[in-house]
Amino acid sequence: MNHILIDLPDSQRDDLAAIVEAEQRPRAAVIRDAIAAYISWHKRPPGVDVFGLWKGRKIDGLAYQQELRSEW
Image 1 (tube, helix red, strand yellow):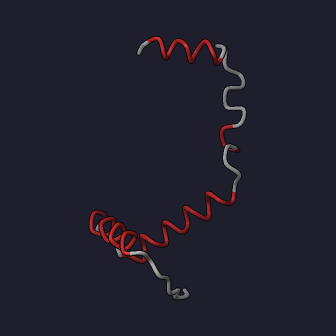
Image 2: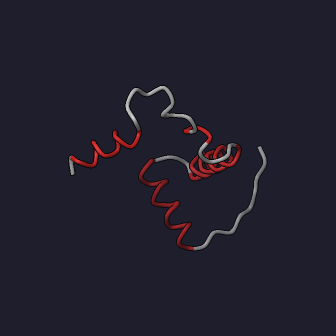
């Protein structure tokens, strides 16, 4: 495993410290998880996972939306 030196603004450092304290995990582990999530998000174009999600449904999408909103 390689070591990487990064500079963080005070606000990010403080937010990171709060996460580390709340999760009771090492700072390096929290940073590795954040980087892994960032890389995973960038490897696939946004929206790919939901394209065609409504395909095959029996109800019209607009009718479904209006039905849900009528509850408000």
